[in-house]
Length: 149
Image (cartoon, rainbow, N blue to C red; front, side, top):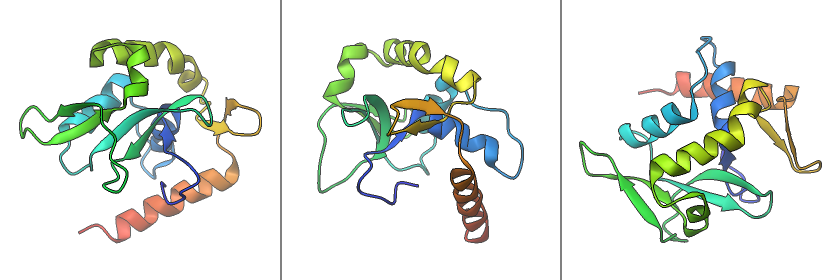
């Protein structure tokens, strides 16, 4: 999903909403569960949480070795592997991860409840996924299941 370089990452509602279009109807994660999964799952690459000034929203992106971001690095407590980098522009939300999560919940929980998962760059608003996004998500899911090792 992060195939295009013109986008800096995926918003929190977008990531949570993706799960509702998996073949199995999963219950949507909360923001706390999303962060827990990121921190606990060593099969997930290191992610960066940053504020995207292009759209005025917080996004997750993969850590890019060619464009290192310095910030507060959070590790998996069991393996001590790096899991999440909080970019400096996220510090406005708070200094600790629990504080940051609380602020993100206030910002995004209502959108998630209303299933407004997709950020429309033209209007600057979150809206429901359109059919192309739904088809793309289903295709990615199918490809991931086919190529699982």
